[in-house]
Length: 181
Image 1: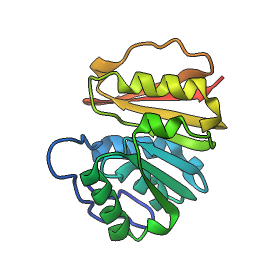
Image 2: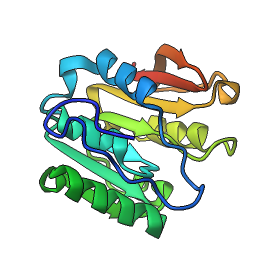
Image 3: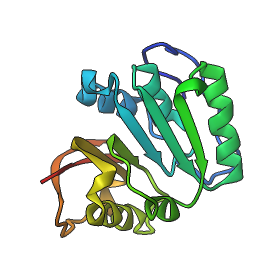
Image 4: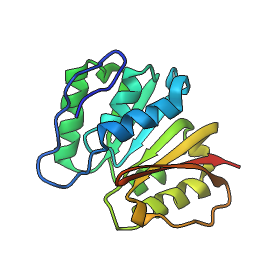
């Protein structure tokens, strides 16, 4: 696991001890950021269920103005902070120790990108998208909510303020891109 490009290109990132996280593959992460392209530069990035922090760190490395990492696991929080220190990107980061749903019950603040990569097969991606759909102020007008799931987890959702704009599959990683209506 490494930073693919940008200011921290090539830096190796630490994994969360134990098996509680499922980091995105370098292939899928590279593809994701190739899709996002220059839209990341100057953007606000929200990394929910942040795990190692590698997606938000990649965004910062590629020029995002800010990344907010939301995670409740103490081991994952330590890993995120260590990875931010290793990459020298801590100055543009905010690490929040919270349950994602408790965080989203707070006052919405618009993000250009919201990355959702929860533990598998628990329906958490659906519940998270539904909360964001009900409080669309979390997503900037032209923003994207991106869900990382196993392809078998996907199902269509009835949403009032968000719509599925694109899907991309990379082996066992399915990326679903939602935009505001």
